Amino acid sequence: MNNETNEEIIKEESINLESDGINWEKQESGVFKFENKGDILIGELINIEKSNTHNNKVYKIRTDEGIVTLFGTTVLDSNMVDVGKGNYIKIVYDGETPHEKKGYSPIKQFSVFKKG
Image 1 (cartoon, rainbow, N blue to C red):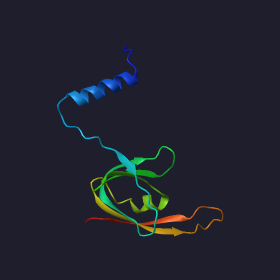
Image 2: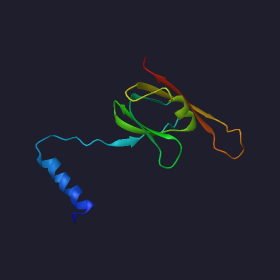
Image 3: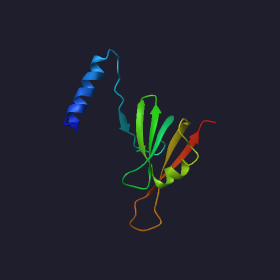
């Protein structure tokens, strides 16, 4: 049985990445949040995952600025049903509508377009 800790393995892999002669570029994913009505996100859908904490999806989208993570909502997930990995998409934040049940948060509305 190997007694190396995860930290030692990660450190060793980092050293290997730096010493292999390849120019590696670290890929980071920022979280994208729609804040204002009319905000737009355009890019290529590269991954769809299930959220670990909610019933909604988690989308990875490659944009001109890099890869972003977008957390789904009930409305967004519904509008993304016919969108698959590799599709070039445009998501427009249409604002909020009041929830029909008192005391609930407003419902975020989205329009989703895919390049045909």
